[in-house]
Length: 186
Image 1 (cartoon, rainbow, N blue to C red):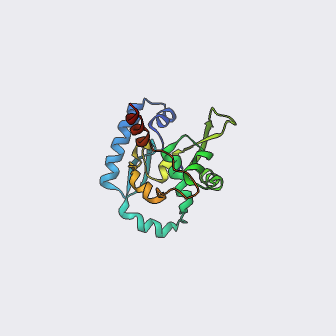
Image 2: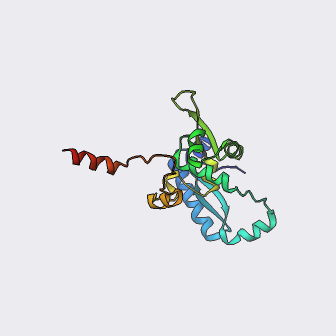
Image 3: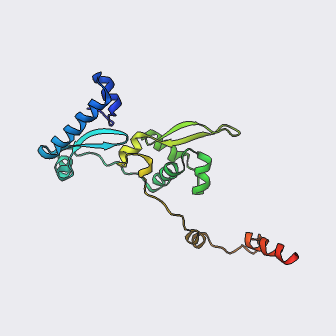
């Protein structure tokens, strides 16, 4: 039993046949399983995997009694930042979250959801992090493009962090203020 999906390329190499033959065989196998079995062939994380059909999930769960691998909120925050901003450094994650994320990154690396993908060409050459095939598999994604689209609403952000300037700090001019000052002098 493989612990990750098999790509058509890997199967073709192992079987010493052309890729198109593997793809045809996978299509036939998927059709046969769909009509005659409690198993199904799914395309996930860049490859194919045989798994139980959804309608049999409860019975399989009762039999196998798998341990739940729930991620805490802080781990999910770090993982979301890595997934959407990759490649990203630990310092960039910390800046977004406002707290230290080293523990979360270590946990995600141990769970094989995040991996060191290189070094940033910056002073200190910080480590760049990205998601793994295991991340795609865990969240049932074919590619990173399958991640839900996130719309950024600046109104929500300013409500969340506030727009008032503390009394002991001078207000900085906004971009709009600078544009209107230049118009008045001309």
